[in-house]
Amino acid sequence: MSQNSKTPEQSTASTPKLGRRSFLAAAAAATGMASTALCREYGPSAAPTRYPEPDVVVLDDRFKKYKLGNSPILRLYHSQKMLWAEGPAWSAVGKYLLWSDIPNNVQYRWLEEDGHVSVFRNPSQCSNGNTFDFQGRQIAFEHLTRTVARYEHDGTRTVLASEYGGKSLNAPNDGAVHPSGDIFFTDPGYGGLMNYEGTRATTGSVQPYQKEAIYRIDAKTGKLHQLSDEIHKPNGLCFSPDYKKVYVADTGASHYDDAKRNIKVWDIIDDGKKLANGKEFASMMMDVETRVRKIVNGREEITYVTEEKGGFADGIRCDEDGNIWASAGWVGDGYDGVHIFSGEDGKRIGQILLPEICSNVCFGGTKRNRLFMTGSTSLYAVYVETRGAHIT
Image (cartoon, rainbow, N blue to C red):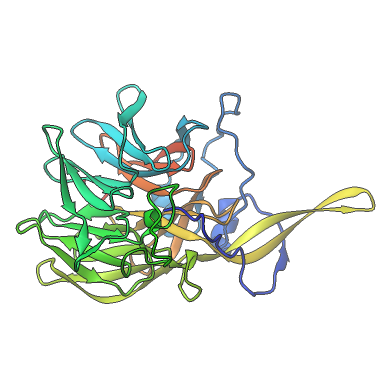
């Protein structure tokens, strides 16, 4: 997803309160408030990380078991030429991570064996999200062509979906493969709103070609079914561990004033063919402590202000315990990174703070216990004491 058209509001109308700075995760857990990051340096001259990793933040005791005491956040790759990293997907067969750089129309690959990074596909049709099916084939959600495409074992490209109801799709964004072989995906239309990430539609509407919606491609018939349009701009999507629920991030506040900044959830019914009982699962609003510098009588004074702020969840993944790991951004220090929500009640239980906006996440590695994070111009990773619920 990209937010070139409208930046999220940085705070609500709630009255700011002066607060005391706390660097301790224990304090954050006690208050339910995010601690403030200090634009951590990840370059070659950066200082080593003192364990435990300070930017993996426990907000609720339920998150403690997932934080490893001696696992640092690593920046695996960075390039000033990479403009908007997105769509990480893990290939268990190839033992590599695939991701997109949408504006540059290219896909990259990171090898687990030695950390080597190379161009995987160029051009990539400005693909946003990527995933793999149960046969190991790459599925790409492409902005430039406004299609969902599958890359076959012989290298050929098969278009799986390009239109619905006689109209072009807006610009497929992200998706996942159900064990039935059906592909669930979102179509918010960002690639149809700008030439930077696709081709700008000439309709003049925030709905480039039709109402934003969630879809399902039937694996047996190839037919495209609309599952729900009761969402402003559906973005990241993932299943619960038992495939009985589907979670979808709504980033509609980028273009709709009445859209909530949240993640929604639906029950999957009729043998995986329909959705029901859609509701909010988690809100992206939270209290964030911000450092404020002032010059008083020629001297610098620093105070800390606590405000409720709300950014966007973009790409999301589910772990084996049902927790949702959501990329988060467009607020700033103390917010941007990854937010982890309990599958039990949707409460935010932890954070991973990054110095860049995080667009998407993916569990991978040999044991699927490493969280990969695409962060604007970088690729980050951290080991956690859980595993991804699905194959990628």
